[in-house]
Amino acid sequence: MFVRNLLTVAIIAFVPASTAIASGGGSEPVPSRDWSFSGLSGTYDKAALQRGYKIYREVCSSCHSMKRIYFRNLSDLGYNEAQIKNIAAEYTVEDGPNDEGDMFERNGLPSDALPSPFPNVQAAKFANGGAFPPDLSLIIKARGNGANYTSALLTGYKDTPPHGEELSDGQYWNTYFPGHKLAMAPPLSEGQISYEDGSLETLEQYSHDVVQFLTWASDPYMEERKSTGFKVIIFLIIFAGIMLAVKRKVWADLH
Ligand code: HEC
Image (tube, rainbow, N blue to C red; front, side, top):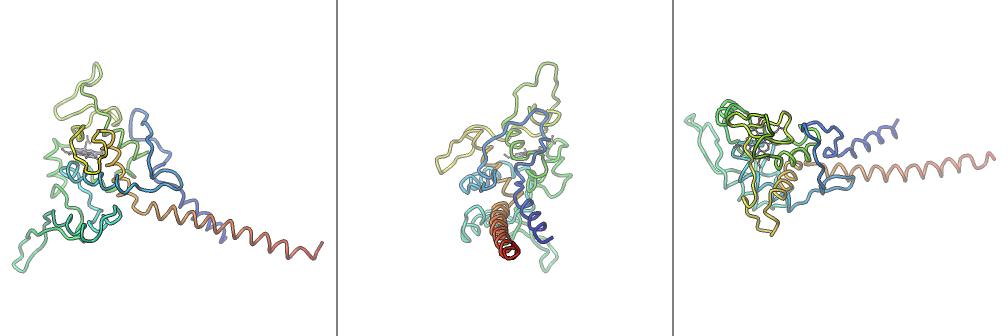
């Protein structure tokens, strides 16, 4: 029973979210990319996480919220406490009510969640031609084959729809979006965001980095889970060895 429980733990610990077998999401087969976080010993690439956060902050955050992420969580990206305080302080957040019952604005603190661009769903839809930009905190988990799908989505726009297809105002053709007609204009283009670490400023690199960041956001404990999985497996191997030795010893006299 005990061993079976341990095995279950080990199996759960080893199923990486990013390699979910379901390949839903796109209506075209989604190409697979190489990710540092896939595989049994995969880890997040901290430099890519930081670049990805920069992209989210400078581009995606004008439409998409990430309500489940708090500034203090950014320590996973390799930022220290002082850096996180500075990052948070660059944002203005609404707080209150104060003693007079009014809401007021102040600088962000590490304990705040990342501020949302719109106060409610209606405002978000109104600003986006009726389409709702989903919260991105768990988007990689919410889509089948999430990392590959999101990366393909960001790079999969076509300037003109295939022959015979019509787009209405505010619609864009995307090879990988189910139904192809997406209400999000291509958010990324070559050279749009400047990198300080010398990484390529290409669409491919941007989509790689922002997906790395979004994958971390939807699965921040992945590294811990995998390392626990390893420890459990090693424990099981040693335990099996000991059991074998005990069995031999117990039965030795009977032959
Ligand atoms: C100008 C606003 C805007 C910006 C900027 C923007 N998006 Fe979107 N996004 C939308 C809207 C609107 C939708 C919903 C589209 C629909 O359902 O047709 C959407 C949908 C999505 C989806 C879900 C697609 C699906 O399968 O349902 C993902 C993922 C996404 N955006 C990622 C991003 C990322 C990553 C960025 C930054 C690089 C970004 N978006 C920037 C407006 C935006």
